[in-house]
Amino acid sequence: MIKYLIIAVITVTLFTG
Image (cartoon, rainbow, N blue to C red; front, side):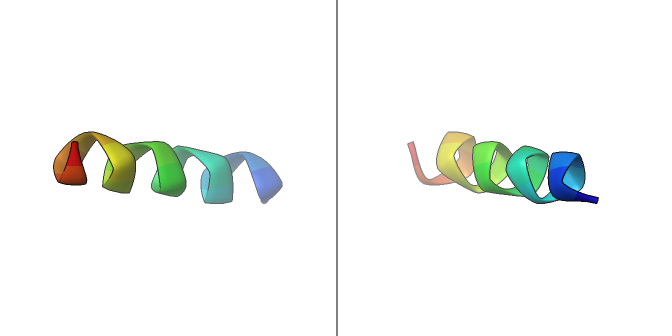
């Protein structure tokens, strides 16, 4: 479950980046 949270953060970072 933590893995999904990290993936979500990375995804948001890519979108905001």
